[in-house]
Figure 1 (cartoon, rainbow, N blue to C red):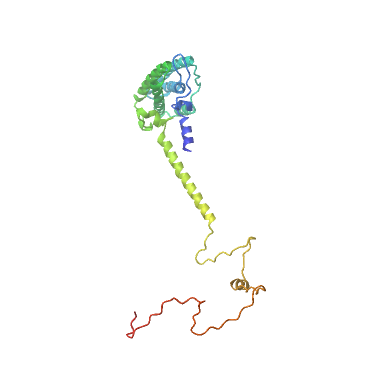
Figure 2: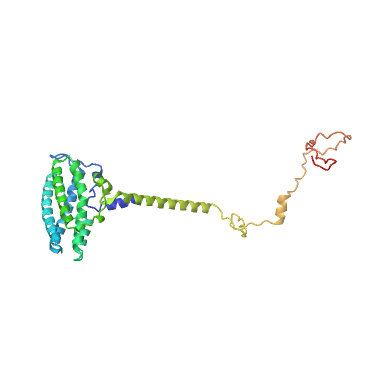
Length: 309
């Protein structure tokens, strides 16, 4: 359950890898600018999806925001995302990478939240959602910039990193960013502890809960099996259940049958046996050798003083 939830959550974030091979460095393709890996393609795709929704959101904020500072930030975001997208499409065309034409489902939800926000909360909703999205894409771009072997991708990653950092400064200058809404992260392990914008500890917590629930279910199943295997003992004051025959009817024992079992009849004398011989009398005082001697110690007698030994 924890694994399935992690996959679903990781796939609904801008920083989530586009394919499983990107997690292990697979899917390498040779180009004139160097090998093109799956992580390189994922970064290009994610930046493209960010441009598809952050640019229109900035243009909308330039018209609807109540604060002049937020309107100016929205105007800059709309212009600069168009410039970054033009550079991205040029790089993707030379590398043969197919770019998406629509943002992700989660990004569409964010666009709806901004568009449906009330006038009083529009500025804060726009600033925090766009700032959170930039914070998720930044670790992906920096990771590709530091590890890619493709020269063209590295140059674009440097350019994209500069754009993203400048946009974060724009949004933070409004004073509306609520940093408590963002998940904490460590710079060297930003991509490790935040997969798809969700923390690995959440996955570990789900896994621990799953193990506890499974252990409780198995323990209850074992108890039910043991109870079903052992016959229930009658409580105090309750009669013992009567035994049943294979046909399912209770068995009864009569008095005659019980006497016959306790006192079985003596077998009839066999004709092959010789007739009993007469006993030979033996003189008095002659010990009977057929009987074992009584080896019990004699009883202790009392002394004259009526005191025991």
